[in-house]
Length: 153
Image 1 (cartoon, rainbow, N blue to C red):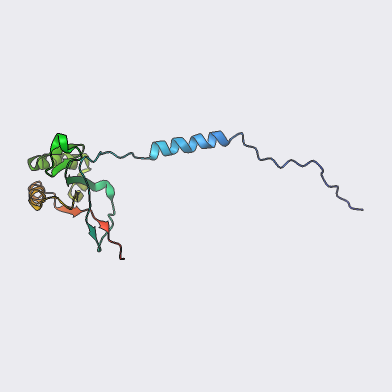
Image 2 (cartoon, one colour):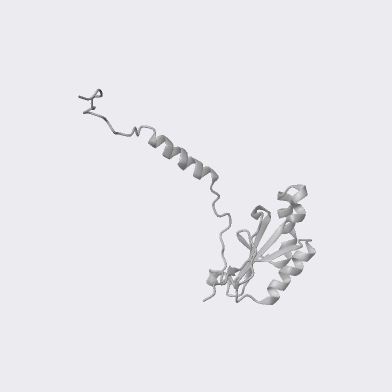
């Protein structure tokens, strides 16, 4: 004879009444913390490959310039263009854009502004050189080119 009696009707259900609340909290958390893409790229991008790459430490200090052939060739032509934010720009507009980017940063971070150039493989070097010259005039000394890691086959 055993001292303990076996329970015949034990319920093994997990209470799920709080599950919808948890799902909505997670949904709201991801909706609030996720940053959507801020810029629509309007130029074709075939980024060159490289072997020696470094990762950026603070991406919040990076501003992007896109150079390439416009996606809407019928509207904008086939010559490579400079895209800053969501609009095409001329090299002379770069100084004003750099100053606006610096104004958005804190005063102690303004010297750390890094300009990243995403340049299409087929873009002309003269246009890239013009952008580099304007960046130098705007005192934007930190410049990098975005590339893709080359895989060894």
